[in-house]
Image 1 (cartoon, one colour):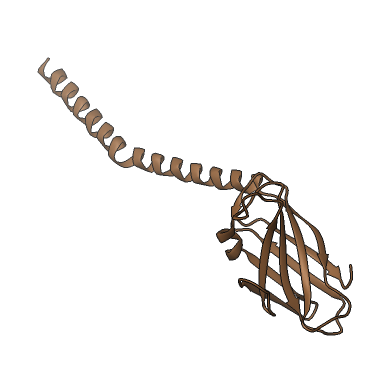
Image 2: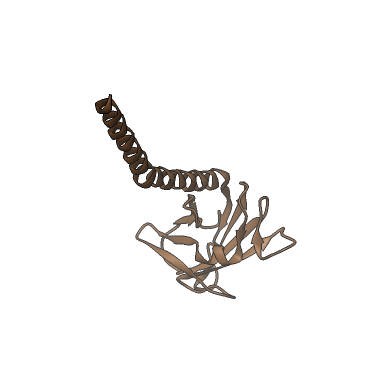
Length: 167
């Protein structure tokens, strides 16, 4: 009878040690993984709600050099972007021989830089769903007649557009 009590006591101690190991080692890992899955799900949801369309791009055939370029982009998704986020978005522009990433500049755009204006917005500090964003830049006067434009939002959604002079 005493051997059964000792065996039962050893089994209970083993069960308590195993349970404490489970609580201290495995459960925190499960909770950490759950937090990671939640972050990934939130990021995927944010990307699915983001959409925009490049509705018009224009550069004149002739005029003063450097020539202006304007691209209008409609926010067709459900994501709202602040003007601070737009300033950090990736804007690429160029022709078939050279494409550059443009940096934001306040005021009149220059070569290698872009500026923007949010149209249709009562609060011009946000690019709301349904609003149109007008990106302005300049291009050199060259013989190229086809241009490449790409726009990448802060959450990784991107679109490209190829257009020509006067179109």
